[in-house]
Every structure is written in structure tokens, then in C-alpha cells.
Amino acid sequence: MILKYTHKNLTWIDLECPTHEEARQMVTEWNIHPLVAQELIGPTTRPKVELYGNFIYLILHIPTIQRKGLKRLIEQQEIDFIIGKNFIITSRYDAIDPLHQFSKLFEVNSILDRSDMGEHAGFIFFYMIRALYEAIAHELESVTDIIREIEENIFKGKERNMVFKISEVSRELLDVRRATSLHKEILESFESASRRFFGEDWSFHTRAIIGEYYKVDNAIRGSFESVAELRETNNSLLNTRETETMKMITIVVFLTLPASVITNFFQMSTAHTPIVGQANDWLIVTSITFISTVFLVLLAKFKKWF
Image 1 (tube, rainbow, N blue to C red):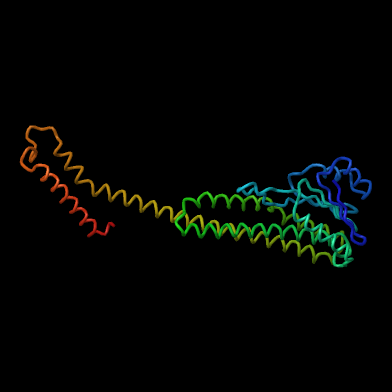
Image 2 (image 1 turned 90 degrees about the horizontal axis):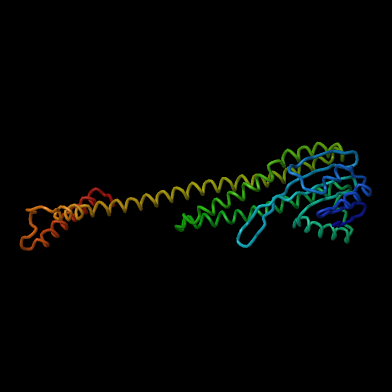
């Protein structure tokens, strides 16, 4: 599917799941190199930047959070950018909300005939990539809210329930970092190529784009550090709780030791077992057991074992 937007002398062509016929149309209409047009048809595994005579070819993978019921899944969505002097072509294989929102902004600018889109297609790319990074930052804010919720639950005594939740958030952050791990190198390569293509004055905007990436990267790093600290705190609280449980079990076993030993002693099958068979033998054995248990309780209190 081909969507086309125009603003003054600038054109944005948005391709969604392009076909071979649509790729050939790009070759004819916009003088796109056939090898680049062929790459638009299917997704690629790695981002890259290539400079051609009349355009820059850039591939980026953008992490997006997909919600399926109660589950949150991080998916890498590829966007291919072909940036010419007066046109920009984007090719994608899924619906991408930030691009959809940007298309509305582009249409409004066209209707109002505003001039703040810039004088060449590089400015369209600048606003577009900034919108994509803002969307990533917004998704990371939702992760931050989850981290705060985990922190509150940890100190409410829900440590065991938070073990899986912490792992889940760590996986999300890892997927986002994996998707953006090569952005820095790719954007630096794009800066070099775009300076040659658009001129030295354009370098300010490329540095601003790299600055948007650093905001996202710092947010990812900060979230990772918060999750690591929460995991350590949660593990410490779990260990403390388990230690207290084992301590109580040990004390109970210790206090019931006299009863177990004494009752087993008088259960021995011998010809002359002391006390057994005499008057008040049950009361005597019970009293010995009770006195021994009380003695151990007082000893434990004196030693401050509990």
C-alpha cells in the first residue's frame, strides 16, 4: 500500500508491506536504485546507512511495546528510509503508531501551508525520527511506572510475587536495548553521509537526532540500574524472610526435643522401666517433660534466641 503526502515542494511516500510492483514504481518515479528497491520488499536483520547520488538509504529497527491481553511484548519494527533532496520514502511491514501520528501532523502543516517543515526532505526525517524516539521514551515511562509499582509491592511483603515481575521488566528493557544497540553507530554514519548530501549546515540537526537517541539510551540505563537495585533488595528481603522461617522451625524443633527424648525413653521395651507402672506414672512423666520444656524456653529467652 502506498500513502502519499505533500507539503509545498516536499513529498513523503509511505509504503506499508510494499509489493514488487510498488518497488518498481519507486524505481521509475523517484529514480531509486534497483538494489535498494529490492530491499524494500522484505525486512532485513541489521540496520545500515548507504549514500547514493540522489538519496541516502537508512535502515533502523524501532522497539515497540505490543499489548496482548495482560502481557507486554517488545517487538522490533523495521523502517527503511530513502531520503532525497525533495522527497522521503519510508517502508515498513507493520502499523507504526508514531508514523501514523506524524502523518496527521504532516497533513495539518500542508493544509495550513506552514513553512516550519524545512527546505528539504532531511527536515522531514528530522521531525519523523524525533517523533519515533519520543514514542520510545514514552514507552519507557510506562516501564518506570511498573518499576515504582514493584518497589511498593516489595515493601508491602509481596517479595515472592515480585520475583517474576522483576524478571519480566528486565526482559522488556533488554529487548529495547537490543533493538537500539546499533542506533548510535548508524546515526553517526548518517551524520557523515548527510553532511555530504545536505551540506555542513545540516550537522546541527543530525547532532540533535543523536541527542534524542542519548535521551532514550540514558533512560534505558537508568531503568536497568533501578531494576538491578530492586532485585538485590528483593533477594535480601526474601533471604531474611527465609532465614526467619528456618529460625522459627529450628526453635520449635529445639523446644520439642525434651518431649521427644523423654517419651521415647519411657517407651523402651525393658523388664524394669523406671516410674512406668507406679502410681501416678503418667503424671510424673508429663511433669518431667513439661519442666524440661520450660527450662529450654527460659534458656532460649536468656540467650535471646527469639
